[in-house]
Length: 356
Image (cartoon, rainbow, N blue to C red; front, side):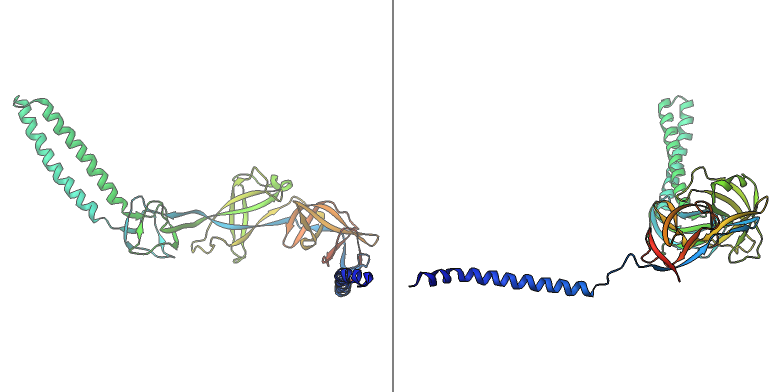
């Protein structure tokens, strides 16, 4: 056999494998080029269309409004001190109750039987004490027998008082006046200590909490009164008395201020409603106000895009106050600056921008 043909036959599998690998590589490269040609390639040098706004100083009204939420003065989930089956629920969600009113009755038949048994024991012990007292005076018995009878009588009286207290606790009463805002159990269910059965809410007095920036915190004083308005009833005049001024700022560098508000006779203001408190500044002032939607919050800092020489540049700002959907800027912007108000998609620091 020709030696050359023999070598070719040995190399033929290797040549075929190399050819197959070459075909696969060429095909993959072709698929990659095809895929890349179909993918949208964003050109960072191409100007983005955005909305601009030129900063101007605006007069701020002497009256400032701060939004808050009405919360109940007192609210609790009612449970029982003793365990037992629920025989009767005397109220329902929405029921108005007074302090001390019976709400739930637990089964207490066994406790009543125990009490009768103790009453029988008490009668016998009282008779023993009388009899032993007469005999002890006549030296017919030892004094220690009388002492044991008297101690037994005291122990029975304590046991009687304990069972009587347990019976009284089977009637669950309202700790304060208010409205039943949640019914968490049903008749026939088993009640255990710590298990919530009803939720009682007192809204005759309300708490109204707002968040105030540090530079305006001095305008609030303990026991000072301010007008409060409900968003649902804007014509309803309420007064809020400051009972708490926060000592620690929250994430937005504002401080909580809590006011106590007396509800109307018809309890129109409900827990969870929104409202506003109004304070008056000593004089009108001019300030920079921008839409709150143009502010980007990033890691507890507030930033806006300022347009300079056709480029959008991130600029850190400090917000002093929020009025509706507008933010009052304390620092970071000056009159005449141009900021981006809309068109933040694909926008980045240093991007070329163009007005819509």
